[in-house]
Length: 491
Image (tube, rainbow, N blue to C red):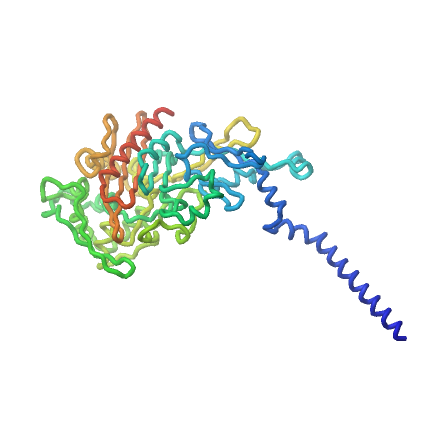
């Protein structure tokens, strides 16, 4: 009897074990494969990702910038061919992912957007041949990028060049940068490096605009028919501003960028010479509500972006030194009006934002949408397919006001803040400015040059830890000359 009970228990245990095996087999045959395939440590996923032949990147003139090549172990690796494009094109890494243009156009470069037919399914699913991506043609111009990068050598800051009226980004530089060819080996060093090379200053750098804010303020003055020829006594007087940095009050003085020969200045004179006092008085006359509305009209509270580009969180990578404020809308009041109007408060601009505002002046008052992708070429195809996009514009001001601002910016190059940008034979307009941030300062240049046969180029330069607007204007002038030469050579 005792022996029979033991046999029954053994049989029950065997049946339960068989049931568990059956359930396990059912799970792994029905649901399990997906679970295994989706695990991050699945070596097949890594192998499949490593086998993808990413498409090439070329510039607007067809110059090869990035390609995929087999290394000494036979594994595919990205090869970035020109150091001047480092950071602009981003990076691709099996370990750390993608950034910059590699991230913006990852779908096309991987080939995920290609519609597969039966032949593709047979090659990939049955023969296990690697997935191939499309090549992309970017708006960047290698020659322009090289010359602007050379002019920026040794500086920390940002430079962006736009083509008008198209909105194509011809050059985009953020310094310091990194070498994507050695990214895996250098990652830990780069993450901890001073200046944060992964921080894209053109797209993420929220900078105090300082005197750069005078351009949208002049547009606002034109829109409200402010008397532009009325002289302001002591228009060259310095303006004292007190701001708070991390709860600590800071007082500094804002002066004219260029000292005018006369003390009595009109608002136009103040713009040409970069003098703050008349603008502070006009803002006080217009009042908080009007200035708040003007900030919204000129995209100051809603900055443009570069479609597709992935921007890392600001709290992950911020420039060294005083933390830069975010681009959140600023609520104006009587106590902060003067500081905000003079570009020394919480209101900030990205270099791309400023470039779009200047581009609007060259486009009848309508701001173009910046973009960086021109065409795509699928694998085994010989013909580039242009990327269809609406590239809509945003009205910022009237055509008459835009033309007026162009003239004043030309005068600023002739005899005002941006004299160092002057280039013989070129139709150049611009503005240079100084801005303070905490205990440091930075300089700006924003300008344009006309092209023969129509169209223009816009350049914006920001130099961090700089107190010399003339140097920003000099670099801006070199960038404009390079952009004009590059665009006219390719036309």
